Length: 256
Image (cartoon, rainbow, N blue to C red; front, side, top):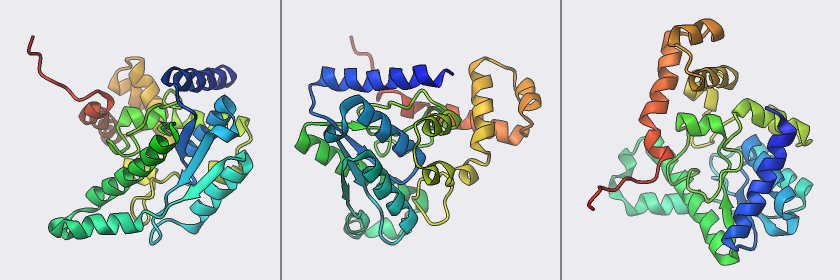
């Protein structure tokens, strides 16, 4: 991919879509990770720093202090308005209102946190007449590696055409602070969680696999070309299949 062309197309996309919607700017969730850093950077280039609000939404008992520091440093580097909202109280209140919540597994609890963050983003977007800018990349979208109506609940996905490895490349090109690029990717929904450990394959390898799948390459040739195991390949293809519903509008029956 020509990263300069991709960068310009993304900037123009953000500018055009917000213009068509008639909104006054954008709200971006800034986690302290590279996807949100790149998204915020491109949004500032498209709209100007005065029209972008960054929201950092840690969970006080879980989010590493380094993530909050990186998020703040990014906002300062971009010169955008910035707010921190601790979601711990909202999550605790929700759990207290549902007696059976004590038996919820960590995925259910994690999805609740992602949806709480989405609600804060839209609350600010509604107040300010702005759009919520998503931070999902192509790798995550193809795998369904996000929370439906959580971090997947957005108005635009500007970097949705970039594989994770391309996110890193474009971020370096734009001079985004190195600590954001080199840290291990994590959704931060439970202690010790990392993307690559949960996926069971590195982003470098999974991007190679996804590119070959898109080309229609046979499974045996994919394994030979990438060196992954049949179990890893099956895991990737299974994720694509079972998460297809996340990439489509909710279905309705044909009645007429």
